[in-house]
Amino acid sequence: MLSLQNLSSFGDVAAEDDAVLDYFLATNVVSEIQSSRAFLVLGRKGTGKTAIVRFLTEGNKKPNNFAKSLNLRGYPWALHAKIKDRGASEIEAYVSSWRYIIFIEIASLILSHPRITHSMHAKGIKEFLQENYGGSSPDLGDILRPRKLKLGKLSVQPSIMGNQLGSLDLERTEKDYQLGLELNALARALFASIVHVIQEAGLGLISIHFDELDQGLSTLDESRKQMLIGLVLAAREVKRECDKEGVAINPIVYLRTDLWDELQFSDKNKISQTLTLNLSWKIESLLDLVETRLRAKLSEDAKWDDIAENDLMRGSQTKWNHILARTFLRPRDVIRFLNASLTEAKRRSVDPLYFTNKDIVNSRDDYSTYLENELDDEIRHHWPQWDEALQACSAISTITFDRSDFVREYDRRKSNSNFITSEEALRILYRFSVIGYEKRSGYGGSSWSFQYIEPEVGWDNAASRFKVHLGLKEYAKLRETRQ
Ligand SMILES: Nc1ncnc2c1ncn2[C@@H]1O[C@H](COP(=O)(O)OP(=O)(O)OP(=O)(O)O)[C@@H](O)[C@H]1O
Ligand SMILES: [Mg+2]
Image 1 (tube, helix red, strand yellow):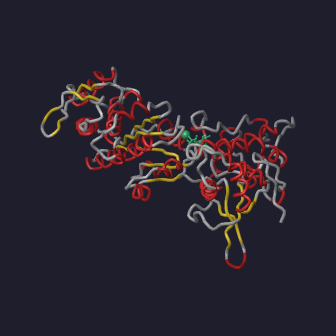
Image 2: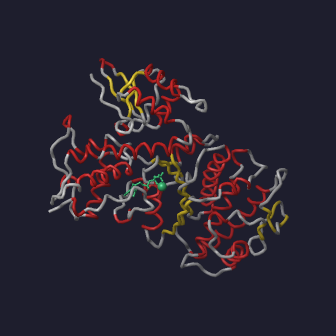
Image 3: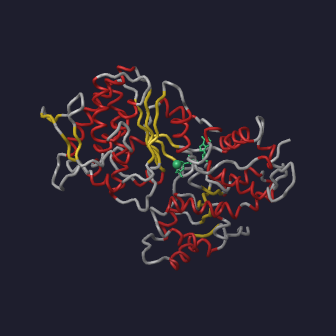
Protein backbone atom coordinates (compact mmCIF):
# COMPACT_ATOMS: atom_id res chain seq x y z
CA MET A 1 0.00 0.00 0.00
CA LEU A 2 1.51 3.33 -1.05
CA SER A 3 1.42 6.14 1.45
CA LEU A 4 2.74 9.67 1.54
CA GLN A 5 3.91 8.84 5.05
CA ASN A 6 6.80 7.01 3.37
CA LEU A 7 7.85 9.99 1.32
CA SER A 8 10.15 12.52 2.97
CA SER A 9 9.95 15.04 0.12
CA PHE A 10 9.65 15.40 -3.65
CA GLY A 11 13.29 16.46 -3.77
CA ASP A 12 15.21 19.66 -3.31
CA VAL A 13 14.17 22.61 -5.45
CA ALA A 14 17.69 23.35 -6.72
CA ALA A 15 19.53 20.74 -8.75
CA GLU A 16 22.80 21.38 -6.91
CA ASP A 17 21.23 20.10 -3.67
CA ASP A 18 18.84 17.60 -5.19
CA ALA A 19 19.62 13.90 -5.69
CA VAL A 20 18.51 14.58 -9.25
CA LEU A 21 20.73 11.88 -10.75
CA ASP A 22 18.62 9.24 -8.98
CA TYR A 23 15.55 10.35 -10.89
CA PHE A 24 16.73 12.45 -13.80
CA LEU A 25 14.29 12.64 -16.68
CA ALA A 26 16.23 12.69 -19.93
CA THR A 27 14.12 14.87 -22.20
CA ASN A 28 14.94 15.29 -25.88
CA VAL A 29 16.84 18.50 -25.08
CA VAL A 30 19.49 16.35 -23.44
CA SER A 31 20.11 14.24 -26.51
CA GLU A 32 20.08 17.38 -28.64
CA ILE A 33 22.79 18.93 -26.49
CA GLN A 34 24.87 15.81 -26.86
CA SER A 35 24.47 15.43 -30.57
CA SER A 36 23.60 18.69 -32.20
CA ARG A 37 25.50 21.81 -33.02
CA ALA A 38 23.76 23.87 -30.35
CA PHE A 39 26.02 25.38 -27.75
CA LEU A 40 23.62 27.69 -25.94
CA VAL A 41 20.90 26.43 -23.60
CA LEU A 42 18.32 28.97 -22.46
CA GLY A 43 15.74 28.54 -19.75
CA ARG A 44 13.95 30.49 -17.08
CA LYS A 45 14.82 29.99 -13.43
CA GLY A 46 14.01 26.49 -12.27
CA THR A 47 13.61 24.94 -15.72
CA GLY A 48 16.45 22.48 -15.20
CA LYS A 49 19.70 23.97 -16.49
CA THR A 50 21.81 22.79 -13.58
CA ALA A 51 20.03 19.42 -13.60
CA ILE A 52 21.17 18.87 -17.20
CA VAL A 53 24.71 19.99 -16.42
CA ARG A 54 24.85 17.55 -13.53
CA PHE A 55 23.46 14.73 -15.63
CA LEU A 56 25.92 15.34 -18.46
CA THR A 57 28.96 15.79 -16.22
CA GLU A 58 28.32 13.44 -13.30
CA GLY A 59 25.56 11.12 -14.43
CA ASN A 60 26.79 9.99 -17.79
CA LYS A 61 29.90 7.97 -17.14
CA LYS A 62 30.51 6.58 -20.59
CA PRO A 63 34.21 6.37 -21.46
CA ASN A 64 33.58 8.27 -24.68
CA ASN A 65 32.10 11.20 -22.87
CA PHE A 66 34.49 13.40 -20.96
CA ALA A 67 32.83 16.40 -19.43
CA LYS A 68 33.30 19.07 -16.83
CA SER A 69 30.94 21.57 -15.30
CA LEU A 70 32.16 25.09 -14.70
CA ASN A 71 30.19 26.83 -12.06
CA LEU A 72 30.35 30.61 -12.11
CA ARG A 73 29.15 30.99 -8.56
CA GLY A 74 31.72 33.27 -6.95
CA TYR A 75 33.41 34.02 -10.26
CA PRO A 76 35.63 37.15 -10.02
CA TRP A 77 33.71 39.20 -12.60
CA ALA A 78 35.39 42.43 -11.52
CA LEU A 79 38.82 40.94 -12.16
CA HIS A 80 37.73 39.67 -15.56
CA ALA A 81 36.25 43.07 -16.42
CA LYS A 82 39.76 44.51 -16.38
CA ILE A 83 41.08 42.04 -18.95
CA LYS A 84 39.48 44.00 -21.72
CA ASP A 85 40.57 43.81 -25.34
CA ARG A 86 40.68 47.45 -26.34
CA GLY A 87 41.60 46.57 -29.89
CA ALA A 88 38.21 44.97 -30.43
CA SER A 89 34.74 46.51 -30.52
CA GLU A 90 32.98 46.92 -27.16
CA ILE A 91 30.77 43.94 -27.95
CA GLU A 92 33.76 41.71 -28.62
CA ALA A 93 35.99 43.11 -25.87
CA TYR A 94 35.90 39.86 -23.86
CA VAL A 95 35.91 37.26 -26.60
CA SER A 96 39.68 36.76 -26.54
CA SER A 97 39.85 36.36 -22.77
CA TRP A 98 37.00 33.82 -22.72
CA ARG A 99 38.53 31.95 -25.60
CA TYR A 100 41.73 31.66 -23.63
CA ILE A 101 39.79 30.48 -20.57
CA ILE A 102 37.93 27.86 -22.60
CA PHE A 103 41.18 26.46 -24.01
CA ILE A 104 42.79 26.39 -20.56
CA GLU A 105 39.79 24.46 -19.25
CA ILE A 106 39.91 22.02 -22.14
CA ALA A 107 43.67 21.64 -21.75
CA SER A 108 43.33 20.91 -18.06
CA LEU A 109 40.45 18.51 -18.68
CA ILE A 110 42.25 16.42 -21.29
CA LEU A 111 45.36 16.18 -19.09
CA SER A 112 43.19 14.40 -16.54
CA HIS A 113 42.00 11.85 -19.11
CA PRO A 114 43.09 8.30 -18.28
CA ARG A 115 44.09 7.63 -21.88
CA ILE A 116 46.41 10.59 -22.16
CA THR A 117 49.85 9.88 -23.68
CA HIS A 118 52.93 11.64 -22.44
CA SER A 119 53.92 13.30 -25.65
CA MET A 120 55.80 16.52 -26.16
CA HIS A 121 52.53 18.41 -26.56
CA ALA A 122 50.96 17.04 -23.40
CA LYS A 123 54.17 17.85 -21.55
CA GLY A 124 54.19 21.40 -22.93
CA ILE A 125 50.64 22.07 -21.77
CA LYS A 126 51.29 20.51 -18.39
CA GLU A 127 54.39 22.56 -17.77
CA PHE A 128 52.71 25.74 -18.96
CA LEU A 129 49.92 25.18 -16.43
CA GLN A 130 52.38 24.24 -13.72
CA GLU A 131 54.53 27.30 -14.28
CA ASN A 132 51.67 29.79 -14.41
CA TYR A 133 49.11 28.27 -12.08
CA GLY A 134 51.09 25.92 -9.85
CA GLY A 135 49.21 22.80 -11.04
CA SER A 136 47.33 21.30 -13.99
CA SER A 137 43.83 22.26 -12.93
CA PRO A 138 43.62 25.93 -12.07
CA ASP A 139 40.31 27.17 -10.64
CA LEU A 140 38.16 28.90 -13.21
CA GLY A 141 38.39 32.12 -11.20
CA ASP A 142 42.19 32.03 -11.20
CA ILE A 143 42.81 31.71 -14.92
CA LEU A 144 43.05 35.45 -15.51
CA ARG A 145 44.65 36.18 -12.14
CA PRO A 146 48.40 36.05 -12.93
CA ARG A 147 49.79 39.44 -13.86
CA LYS A 148 52.13 37.89 -16.33
CA LEU A 149 51.90 34.57 -18.18
CA LYS A 150 55.13 32.80 -19.08
CA LEU A 151 54.87 31.05 -22.42
CA GLY A 152 58.26 29.34 -22.79
CA LYS A 153 57.11 25.82 -21.90
CA LEU A 154 54.49 25.41 -24.63
CA SER A 155 55.39 23.05 -27.46
CA VAL A 156 53.82 25.40 -29.99
CA GLN A 157 55.14 28.89 -29.42
CA PRO A 158 52.64 31.75 -29.62
CA SER A 159 53.67 34.33 -32.14
CA ILE A 160 52.30 37.42 -33.84
CA MET A 161 53.37 38.01 -37.44
CA GLY A 162 56.34 35.73 -36.99
CA ASN A 163 57.49 37.28 -33.72
CA GLN A 164 57.46 34.93 -30.76
CA LEU A 165 55.91 36.12 -27.55
CA GLY A 166 58.04 35.20 -24.57
CA SER A 167 55.42 36.24 -22.06
CA LEU A 168 52.05 37.95 -21.89
CA ASP A 169 51.10 40.76 -19.53
CA LEU A 170 47.48 40.52 -18.42
CA GLU A 171 47.73 43.89 -16.71
CA ARG A 172 47.47 46.58 -19.32
CA THR A 173 47.21 50.31 -19.43
CA GLU A 174 44.13 51.90 -20.95
CA LYS A 175 46.04 52.68 -24.11
CA ASP A 176 47.31 49.23 -24.84
CA TYR A 177 45.57 47.70 -27.82
CA GLN A 178 47.72 44.55 -28.07
CA LEU A 179 46.14 42.40 -25.36
CA GLY A 180 43.54 40.77 -27.60
CA LEU A 181 46.07 39.96 -30.29
CA GLU A 182 48.40 38.35 -27.79
CA LEU A 183 45.65 36.38 -26.05
CA ASN A 184 44.47 35.10 -29.40
CA ALA A 185 48.00 34.05 -30.33
CA LEU A 186 48.30 32.22 -27.04
CA ALA A 187 44.90 30.57 -27.48
CA ARG A 188 45.90 29.46 -30.99
CA ALA A 189 49.10 27.89 -29.70
CA LEU A 190 47.27 26.12 -26.89
CA PHE A 191 44.66 24.90 -29.34
CA ALA A 192 47.32 23.48 -31.67
CA SER A 193 48.79 21.48 -28.77
CA ILE A 194 45.32 20.40 -27.64
CA VAL A 195 44.50 19.08 -31.13
CA HIS A 196 47.73 17.04 -31.11
CA VAL A 197 47.03 15.60 -27.68
CA ILE A 198 43.45 14.67 -28.56
CA GLN A 199 44.51 13.00 -31.78
CA GLU A 200 47.46 11.16 -30.22
CA ALA A 201 45.27 9.73 -27.48
CA GLY A 202 42.23 9.21 -29.72
CA LEU A 203 39.91 10.95 -27.29
CA GLY A 204 36.14 11.06 -27.87
CA LEU A 205 33.77 13.90 -27.14
CA ILE A 206 34.98 16.48 -24.66
CA SER A 207 32.49 18.98 -23.29
CA ILE A 208 32.58 21.81 -20.82
CA HIS A 209 29.42 23.32 -19.39
CA PHE A 210 29.23 26.90 -18.14
CA ASP A 211 26.43 27.23 -15.60
CA GLU A 212 25.21 29.81 -13.07
CA LEU A 213 26.28 32.84 -15.02
CA ASP A 214 23.73 34.84 -13.06
CA GLN A 215 25.11 34.10 -9.61
CA GLY A 216 25.89 37.15 -7.52
CA LEU A 217 24.25 39.39 -10.07
CA SER A 218 22.72 42.56 -8.68
CA THR A 219 22.32 44.65 -11.79
CA LEU A 220 23.09 43.70 -15.33
CA ASP A 221 25.44 46.55 -16.21
CA GLU A 222 27.15 47.12 -19.55
CA SER A 223 30.39 45.43 -18.63
CA ARG A 224 28.59 42.33 -17.34
CA LYS A 225 26.54 42.24 -20.54
CA GLN A 226 29.71 42.45 -22.60
CA MET A 227 31.27 39.63 -20.62
CA LEU A 228 28.19 37.43 -21.16
CA ILE A 229 28.19 38.20 -24.87
CA GLY A 230 31.94 37.53 -24.92
CA LEU A 231 31.46 34.06 -23.48
CA VAL A 232 28.72 33.20 -25.95
CA LEU A 233 30.77 34.42 -28.92
CA ALA A 234 33.93 32.73 -27.65
CA ALA A 235 32.11 29.42 -27.22
CA ARG A 236 30.82 29.70 -30.77
CA GLU A 237 34.29 30.47 -32.12
CA VAL A 238 35.89 27.59 -30.26
CA LYS A 239 33.20 25.27 -31.54
CA ARG A 240 33.82 26.41 -35.11
CA GLU A 241 37.59 26.02 -34.77
CA CYS A 242 37.16 22.53 -33.36
CA ASP A 243 34.76 21.49 -36.11
CA LYS A 244 37.25 22.72 -38.66
CA GLU A 245 40.07 20.72 -37.11
CA GLY A 246 37.85 17.68 -36.72
CA VAL A 247 38.15 17.44 -32.94
CA ALA A 248 35.00 16.85 -30.91
CA ILE A 249 34.90 19.61 -28.31
CA ASN A 250 31.65 21.12 -27.07
CA PRO A 251 31.72 24.26 -24.97
CA ILE A 252 28.12 24.78 -23.83
CA VAL A 253 26.73 27.88 -22.16
CA TYR A 254 23.59 27.75 -19.97
CA LEU A 255 21.90 31.07 -19.49
CA ARG A 256 18.73 32.40 -17.94
CA THR A 257 16.32 33.52 -20.65
CA ASP A 258 15.72 36.91 -19.03
CA LEU A 259 19.44 37.72 -19.19
CA TRP A 260 19.74 36.59 -22.80
CA ASP A 261 16.77 38.81 -23.67
CA GLU A 262 18.74 41.83 -22.44
CA LEU A 263 21.81 41.19 -24.58
CA GLN A 264 22.17 42.94 -27.89
CA PHE A 265 24.71 42.09 -30.56
CA SER A 266 24.67 41.57 -34.26
CA ASP A 267 24.78 37.76 -34.44
CA LYS A 268 22.23 37.25 -31.72
CA ASN A 269 19.39 36.30 -34.02
CA LYS A 270 21.49 33.89 -35.96
CA ILE A 271 22.58 32.16 -32.77
CA SER A 272 19.00 32.05 -31.44
CA GLN A 273 17.72 30.53 -34.65
CA THR A 274 20.23 27.77 -35.18
CA LEU A 275 22.52 27.18 -32.22
CA THR A 276 20.21 27.52 -29.24
CA LEU A 277 18.03 25.12 -27.27
CA ASN A 278 15.15 26.42 -25.17
CA LEU A 279 14.11 24.53 -22.07
CA SER A 280 10.36 24.30 -21.93
CA TRP A 281 8.10 21.76 -20.31
CA LYS A 282 4.69 20.37 -21.08
CA ILE A 283 2.17 19.24 -18.50
CA GLU A 284 2.72 15.58 -19.45
CA SER A 285 6.49 15.75 -19.11
CA LEU A 286 6.13 17.40 -15.71
CA LEU A 287 3.89 14.53 -14.66
CA ASP A 288 6.56 12.18 -15.93
CA LEU A 289 9.13 14.07 -13.84
CA VAL A 290 7.04 13.72 -10.69
CA GLU A 291 6.23 10.06 -11.29
CA THR A 292 9.91 9.31 -11.93
CA ARG A 293 10.57 10.70 -8.46
CA LEU A 294 7.73 8.63 -6.96
CA ARG A 295 9.16 5.49 -8.54
CA ALA A 296 12.61 6.21 -7.16
CA LYS A 297 11.44 7.24 -3.71
CA LEU A 298 8.26 5.26 -3.00
CA SER A 299 7.80 2.21 -5.13
CA GLU A 300 8.77 0.95 -8.56
CA ASP A 301 5.30 1.27 -10.05
CA ALA A 302 4.05 4.34 -8.18
CA LYS A 303 1.84 6.78 -10.05
CA TRP A 304 0.39 10.17 -9.27
CA ASP A 305 -3.09 8.65 -8.94
CA ASP A 306 -1.78 6.36 -6.18
CA ILE A 307 -0.90 9.26 -3.89
CA ALA A 308 -3.84 11.60 -4.46
CA GLU A 309 -7.51 11.05 -3.69
CA ASN A 310 -9.40 11.23 -6.92
CA ASP A 311 -12.28 13.59 -6.04
CA LEU A 312 -12.24 16.76 -8.10
CA MET A 313 -11.61 20.27 -6.85
CA ARG A 314 -13.79 23.34 -7.34
CA GLY A 315 -14.71 23.89 -10.96
CA SER A 316 -14.34 20.13 -11.64
CA GLN A 317 -10.59 20.47 -11.76
CA THR A 318 -8.19 17.65 -10.98
CA LYS A 319 -5.62 18.24 -8.25
CA TRP A 320 -2.85 17.95 -10.78
CA ASN A 321 -4.34 20.63 -13.04
CA HIS A 322 -5.04 22.84 -10.06
CA ILE A 323 -1.36 22.68 -9.12
CA LEU A 324 -0.06 23.13 -12.65
CA ALA A 325 -2.23 26.20 -13.20
CA ARG A 326 -0.30 27.86 -10.38
CA THR A 327 3.12 27.20 -11.89
CA PHE A 328 4.99 28.59 -14.87
CA LEU A 329 5.33 24.97 -16.07
CA ARG A 330 8.77 24.72 -14.49
CA PRO A 331 9.99 21.70 -12.55
CA ARG A 332 11.02 23.81 -9.54
CA ASP A 333 7.50 25.24 -9.18
CA VAL A 334 5.93 21.80 -9.28
CA ILE A 335 8.38 20.30 -6.80
CA ARG A 336 7.98 23.27 -4.48
CA PHE A 337 4.18 23.07 -4.57
CA LEU A 338 4.19 19.35 -3.90
CA ASN A 339 6.59 19.71 -0.99
CA ALA A 340 4.25 22.28 0.57
CA SER A 341 1.29 19.93 0.02
CA LEU A 342 3.24 17.07 1.55
CA THR A 343 3.87 19.12 4.67
CA GLU A 344 0.14 19.90 4.81
CA ALA A 345 -0.85 16.27 4.34
CA LYS A 346 1.51 15.08 7.05
CA ARG A 347 -0.30 17.16 9.62
CA ARG A 348 -2.84 14.34 9.50
CA SER A 349 -1.37 11.28 11.11
CA VAL A 350 -3.29 8.72 9.09
CA ASP A 351 -1.76 5.85 7.18
CA PRO A 352 -2.02 5.30 4.28
CA LEU A 353 -1.87 9.01 3.57
CA TYR A 354 -3.01 10.58 0.29
CA PHE A 355 -3.33 14.16 -0.90
CA THR A 356 -6.75 15.66 -0.31
CA ASN A 357 -8.17 18.76 -1.96
CA LYS A 358 -7.69 20.58 1.29
CA ASP A 359 -3.96 19.78 1.36
CA ILE A 360 -3.61 21.33 -2.05
CA VAL A 361 -5.61 24.43 -1.15
CA ASN A 362 -3.78 24.88 2.16
CA SER A 363 -0.36 24.82 0.55
CA ARG A 364 -1.12 27.74 -1.74
CA ASP A 365 -0.08 30.48 0.72
CA ASP A 366 3.35 29.07 1.25
CA TYR A 367 3.79 28.31 -2.43
CA SER A 368 2.67 31.77 -3.47
CA THR A 369 5.36 33.40 -1.33
CA TYR A 370 7.93 31.12 -2.94
CA LEU A 371 6.73 32.08 -6.42
CA GLU A 372 7.00 35.79 -5.67
CA ASN A 373 10.56 35.23 -4.44
CA GLU A 374 11.53 33.40 -7.59
CA LEU A 375 10.05 36.18 -9.70
CA ASP A 376 11.91 38.73 -7.65
CA ASP A 377 15.18 36.96 -8.48
CA GLU A 378 14.37 37.26 -12.16
CA ILE A 379 12.83 40.72 -12.37
CA ARG A 380 14.87 42.68 -9.83
CA HIS A 381 17.92 43.01 -12.14
CA HIS A 382 15.81 44.58 -14.81
CA TRP A 383 13.48 46.61 -12.64
CA PRO A 384 14.30 46.93 -8.94
CA GLN A 385 10.96 48.57 -8.06
CA TRP A 386 8.73 45.97 -9.69
CA ASP A 387 7.07 45.37 -6.31
CA GLU A 388 5.34 48.73 -6.77
CA ALA A 389 3.51 47.22 -9.71
CA LEU A 390 2.56 44.15 -7.71
CA GLN A 391 1.31 46.40 -4.92
CA ALA A 392 -0.81 48.22 -7.48
CA CYS A 393 -2.37 44.85 -8.37
CA SER A 394 -2.99 44.16 -4.68
CA ALA A 395 -4.68 47.53 -4.33
CA ILE A 396 -7.03 46.71 -7.20
CA SER A 397 -7.70 43.52 -5.20
CA THR A 398 -9.34 41.42 -7.92
CA ILE A 399 -7.42 38.91 -9.97
CA THR A 400 -8.55 40.50 -13.23
CA PHE A 401 -8.34 44.22 -13.81
CA ASP A 402 -8.67 47.01 -16.37
CA ARG A 403 -5.79 49.03 -17.73
CA SER A 404 -7.20 52.23 -16.24
CA ASP A 405 -7.29 50.70 -12.73
CA PHE A 406 -3.68 49.72 -13.03
CA VAL A 407 -2.54 53.09 -14.32
CA ARG A 408 -4.30 54.83 -11.43
CA GLU A 409 -2.91 52.56 -8.67
CA TYR A 410 0.56 52.27 -10.15
CA ASP A 411 1.05 55.99 -10.69
CA ARG A 412 -0.09 56.58 -7.14
CA ARG A 413 2.62 54.25 -5.78
CA LYS A 414 5.44 54.87 -8.19
CA SER A 415 8.56 56.09 -6.35
CA ASN A 416 10.98 58.70 -7.71
CA SER A 417 13.67 56.15 -8.48
CA ASN A 418 11.25 54.07 -10.56
CA PHE A 419 11.49 55.19 -14.19
CA ILE A 420 9.15 52.57 -15.63
CA THR A 421 5.89 54.01 -16.94
CA SER A 422 2.62 52.20 -16.34
CA GLU A 423 2.55 51.15 -19.96
CA GLU A 424 6.03 49.63 -19.79
CA ALA A 425 5.20 48.12 -16.41
CA LEU A 426 2.35 46.09 -17.92
CA ARG A 427 4.61 44.94 -20.72
CA ILE A 428 7.33 43.74 -18.31
CA LEU A 429 4.81 42.03 -16.04
CA TYR A 430 3.56 40.21 -19.12
CA ARG A 431 7.09 39.29 -20.20
CA PHE A 432 7.62 37.45 -16.90
CA SER A 433 4.08 36.03 -16.96
CA VAL A 434 3.09 37.86 -13.80
CA ILE A 435 0.04 38.91 -15.83
CA GLY A 436 -1.69 37.81 -19.01
CA TYR A 437 -4.00 39.86 -21.18
CA GLU A 438 -7.43 39.24 -22.60
CA LYS A 439 -7.31 38.15 -26.18
CA ARG A 440 -10.48 38.47 -28.19
CA SER A 441 -11.20 35.85 -30.77
CA GLY A 442 -13.77 35.99 -33.54
CA TYR A 443 -17.38 35.09 -32.64
CA GLY A 444 -17.24 37.19 -29.46
CA GLY A 445 -15.15 34.76 -27.42
CA SER A 446 -12.07 35.63 -25.40
CA SER A 447 -9.21 33.96 -23.56
CA TRP A 448 -6.21 34.91 -21.41
CA SER A 449 -2.90 35.00 -23.17
CA PHE A 450 0.16 34.33 -21.01
CA GLN A 451 3.71 34.52 -22.28
CA TYR A 452 4.78 31.18 -20.75
CA ILE A 453 1.90 29.34 -22.40
CA GLU A 454 1.96 30.93 -25.85
CA PRO A 455 5.26 32.79 -26.28
CA GLU A 456 4.70 33.11 -30.01
CA VAL A 457 1.63 35.34 -29.55
CA GLY A 458 3.53 38.27 -28.04
CA TRP A 459 2.46 41.38 -26.23
CA ASP A 460 -0.55 43.41 -27.31
CA ASN A 461 -0.06 47.13 -26.73
CA ALA A 462 -3.76 47.75 -27.06
CA ALA A 463 -4.87 45.16 -24.50
CA SER A 464 -7.25 46.59 -21.95
CA ARG A 465 -8.02 43.71 -19.57
CA PHE A 466 -5.48 41.70 -17.63
CA LYS A 467 -5.26 38.80 -15.25
CA VAL A 468 -2.68 38.17 -12.54
CA HIS A 469 -1.11 34.71 -12.61
CA LEU A 470 -2.95 32.36 -10.25
CA GLY A 471 0.22 31.46 -8.38
CA LEU A 472 0.42 35.02 -7.06
CA LYS A 473 -3.17 35.20 -5.90
CA GLU A 474 -2.39 34.48 -2.25
CA TYR A 475 0.79 36.54 -2.07
CA ALA A 476 -0.90 39.60 -3.56
CA LYS A 477 -4.10 38.93 -1.58
CA LEU A 478 -6.36 38.91 -4.61
CA ARG A 479 -9.88 37.59 -4.88
CA GLU A 480 -11.77 36.09 -7.78
CA THR A 481 -13.58 38.56 -9.96
CA ARG A 482 -17.36 38.21 -9.92
CA GLN A 483 -18.68 37.68 -13.41
N1 LIG B 1 15.30 16.68 -16.36
C1 LIG B 1 15.05 16.69 -15.05
N2 LIG B 1 14.84 15.53 -14.39
C2 LIG B 1 14.59 15.54 -13.05
N3 LIG B 1 14.53 16.65 -12.31
C3 LIG B 1 14.74 17.83 -12.91
C4 LIG B 1 15.01 17.91 -14.30
N4 LIG B 1 15.16 19.21 -14.64
C5 LIG B 1 15.01 19.90 -13.50
N5 LIG B 1 14.76 19.08 -12.46
C6 LIG B 1 14.56 19.50 -11.06
O1 LIG B 1 13.92 20.77 -11.07
C7 LIG B 1 14.48 21.64 -10.10
C8 LIG B 1 15.02 22.90 -10.75
O2 LIG B 1 16.07 22.56 -11.65
P1 LIG B 1 17.47 23.37 -11.71
O3 LIG B 1 17.96 23.68 -10.34
O4 LIG B 1 18.35 22.56 -12.59
O5 LIG B 1 16.99 24.69 -12.45
P2 LIG B 1 17.88 25.85 -13.09
O6 LIG B 1 17.38 26.07 -14.47
O7 LIG B 1 19.33 25.53 -12.93
O8 LIG B 1 17.46 27.10 -12.19
P3 LIG B 1 18.32 28.42 -11.80
O9 LIG B 1 18.23 29.33 -12.99
O10 LIG B 1 17.58 28.98 -10.62
O11 LIG B 1 19.70 27.98 -11.48
C9 LIG B 1 15.53 20.81 -9.38
O12 LIG B 1 14.94 20.20 -8.26
C10 LIG B 1 15.89 19.75 -10.38
O13 LIG B 1 16.39 18.59 -9.77
MG1 LIG C 1 20.84 26.39 -11.86
